[in-house]
Length: 363
Image (tube, rainbow, N blue to C red):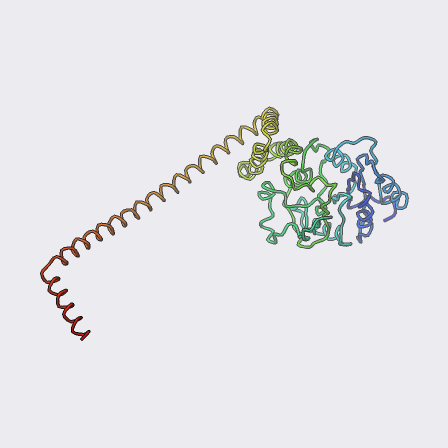
């Protein structure tokens, strides 16, 4: 794609210590087949390995395509994303982190065509293949939902079902991404969702790599929430500022916030969760108050449900006790009747006759 024509699509990629993976990522961008101009902007966050040298190598080889941003100090993932996206000149922006890669050479053509044909959509995405490097887990497709009706804004507020390397946005103002938030991609998806519908293309066109150096590698929930709990709350606070006034989304908006506060509160270390909760309540008082209100309402519902269940069980037990009592009374009546029969002259005569017949049969 030579020349100075303004690109239709900007591929925005960020990297940090990705020397093992970045060639595969960059090659997957360069292999794209499109009938329009595109650019590749790579923002490296002051990597300490050989990543910057590899980016320079590609920039020198493809100067009209690869636009490097090599930072001299580490600014963090949100600022790296924000600044790199602000340099994009394209009508559309496709994201990818440099430890992931694309698998379909027609990806940006397919997604740009979709956005061209669906002006009501603010962005579109597709499922990706997920594999776990160095682990025995089987590869999966994410998300596994197939019905686009389940992939809407309300569901996205509840949980992030969109992988970073699957999205293509219409260009918006991305210079105001809050600093110190996590996950950044979830914020970006929800930020862009306020401008239109979410488009879904049911075609796997990329691979997401889970590896030891990634943020999401650890299976230790304790360690994850101790390290990233406040960053999660910061992200949710930013989303509340966008959607907090929309009554129809309140329940969906606060569902993951409730989960985040509970995850922090349930840390096994008393000192950890006390300190984190104190920090969270001090920094996000309105969100904390809403959490407490919803949590108490949830607990009250649970108590009422338990009371109803106990009441139902009590009623059932009383019915069983009544049946047992009736059976006991019937048995007592039968025993009394049997005792009366065995004391009667008729019973004694019948017993005597059985004895005579028994002796007669023996002879």
